Image (cartoon, rainbow, N blue to C red; front, side, top):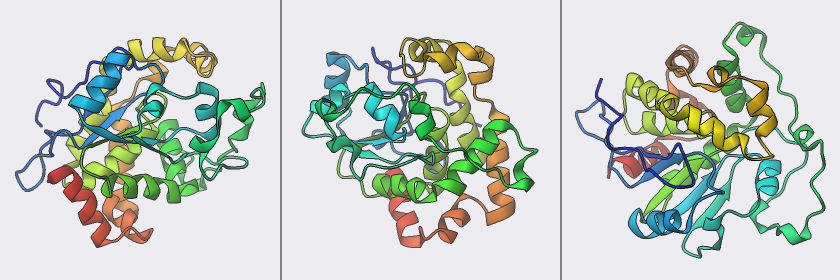
Length: 276
């Protein structure tokens, strides 16, 4: 396994978990191309310098936001929303009560005060009986695929069709929802499973700073203090198990994509996005 902990991090003022998916080895002896797809935690607190670095230096042109509608509205408009060159797309991976066809078209001035029970807009997920013995995080990831497959596919299609420049995919912490979408992207690019697992586990390197950042936001503070840092830390065995289940049940991540209508042409487009 190659070292993934050297030069892939983007050290920004307003995020703690931003890194480039370039530079990873592939089955055919190649590597993924830097500057195409980034993964990150929440982008709400980017500094002016961060915005310039992302837009001018990294040539960021698209944001793929995996948070729920309530998270987006409660956190408000991040600074990248003011940049005309950057397109924002929203694909919640959790089942929700109600929906917005374009959550980014809703201006804060048009909103009432968010309800105190905003978390209840996220509907309870049902766990298949044969998955009940899996680790909680694995159950959550399987839930994204079972309950919001159309949005997993929508996020991947947005990444595959991205214009010239970079795209960033993010959620709140950049580890769970982002981790699943990134795993499929890397699998399409031909990155071996062990490297996908290693990329996923990298978030553990910054987990203390990540938890502290989210704890400073009223949206996430309660969840951060209710559980200790260890419970938020991603573990390699979680992603390893998810990939093993995809292998067993679908012939791998690409098999799952094919079964859900993301066929060979789209898979090749996603592969080309990361391979050049």
